[in-house]
Structure formats: structure tokens, C-alpha cells
Length: 343
Ligand code: ZN
Image (cartoon, rainbow, N blue to C red):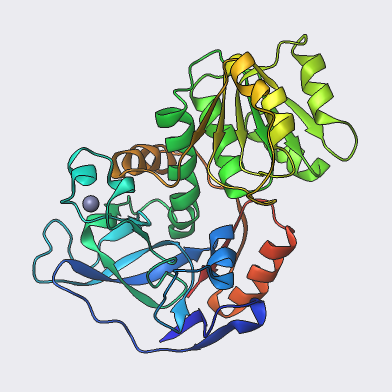
């Protein structure tokens, strides 16, 4: 079967479109005929690699996928050949203390499909049945795939961790990425507002307004920290969503009102930076980190995707063979929404 893989860690020159063996399945797994897969920044981090990450190579990329059940393992119940399914990318054991308390995203054996295990940029992939969610036949596979990782991540961050309430003001730093386009919609759905979005292009900001942003700021045209200060009558906002990191963190903290919270699930501009601790304690601020989300959040947010109240933004849906070219665009930041492939 065809797949987008890398043979060794490194840059995008390592990414290849090749034939690999069709995977076998264990008793708790299903074989998924992938109808759509999608990429995330995570794919670029995994490609680059880090100490302690030991993958079976070649590694099949892509943490997002949806498709049709093609084969079911001996112990699998509740799913049958032909079912249309979306897949929660977070793998968990179902038995450790974290899993038993509903915090399966903190599982002792936590893994992400496409990160620690083979992903979805292939014609078929083996997936634990525990990760499947049946989807209505009326939902497009590319929508289910494109939504999975970013929507569960944003939902868990804003709603479960951040406890976002109706009427609270929110600043989202970044407009084009998948998590940010999800976060804008989730904030709107929660009744939050005003919703401020900082972005790098008028095109991305126009999309942000379409998705629910009340005020947008082009960071190339004005100092967004000052703009927020002014727009909030020097009060700041209740919540900042910052997945940019090094380039924005201090300004994000300064944009919070007393008692505010900063949510983070990543750092596209770099993970290390200095902060003045006085910013934190003097204003009673909280920094709340998370990654991915538990099964119950995945099911909850996907229900809103399936009924159309949340909408994954897909920049491009191209044949699987174009995977490497899409990853180059992702690296260049030349995307608004998600990049998806069709095996
Ligand atoms: Zn577990």
C-alpha cells in the first residue's frame, strides 16, 4: 500500500511517498481504510525527532484520520466492517489510574497516533478500537479527520482546563493554525466575548472574523499588546490562548487582567523564554498547560463537528502523493487551516 513516510529523522528531504506493507491488526484493533488524513505541526516535530523518541522506521506520518472499518480484531465489539469512523489520536491503556479516573490523556502508556505509532497518511492503518468514534454517513471524511487533533486539543484547553465562561473576554494569539481556528469557534460557542484575535495577514484575520472573532489585530501593522490594552480600557482580558511561545508569551501575560489565565498547548515560535515572575503573582495570573484531551472531550467536541456547529477549516485536500509538498507549505507557515490528504 502507498504511504507518506520518513526513513530517518531530519528535514523534509527525508519524506517519501512509497509502498509499505499493509499493517496487521491485534485482537483489540481494527484495520482502517483511510479516506482522509490530515497533518499538524506535530508531524514536523516528529520528523525532526528528539532524544528518547525511538520510532520503528520507516514511520507513517499524520495524526489525524477518518475512514471505513475494513477488518475487526477478535476482541472488538461495537464496530463492524463498513462503519464510518473518526479516530481520536490519543492512545491510552484503559487500565491505569489515570485512565480509570477519566484522565486517559495522561495515561501511563500515553501515545499519539502518527507520533509514537504509525499514522494515517497511508491507504490503511491499524487503530485500537478504543480510539474509534462512529460518524454519521453525512459527514465528510476530511472534516472528521481535519477536526480530530486540533478540536480535542482546543476543547480540552479552553473548556475543561480553562473553564471558559460565557461573557469572558478572550485573546487568541495566532489566526491561521488549526488549533487557533478551532479555539475561536469554541470560544464563540461557549458564549465568550469579546474575542480578540492577533494574526499575521488580513486573509487569516478575515477568516477569524468569519469564525466569530469580534476584534482582529494585524501584528505587522500595530503593536498588538498595546492594541489590546487600549481596546480593553487598560483592563486586559480574562483569558489568553497562546500556542506561539517565545515570540509572544510576555506580551500575552501583560494582556491579562487580574486573575486572568493563559492557556497553552504548544509553542510554534520556540519553547524557551524568560518571564518576570512579578507579572504572575502581582496580577494573580495562572498559566495552564495541556496537551491533547481525554476521550470524553473528544466525543463531546466531535458531536459539535458532526452537527455542524463547529467547522474544521481545510486549506487543501489533495491526493496522498502530494503529502510532502503539503508538509513544505506547513513548514513555511503558508496555510490557513488544515492540510488534508486523500489516499
Ligand atoms: Zn492508562
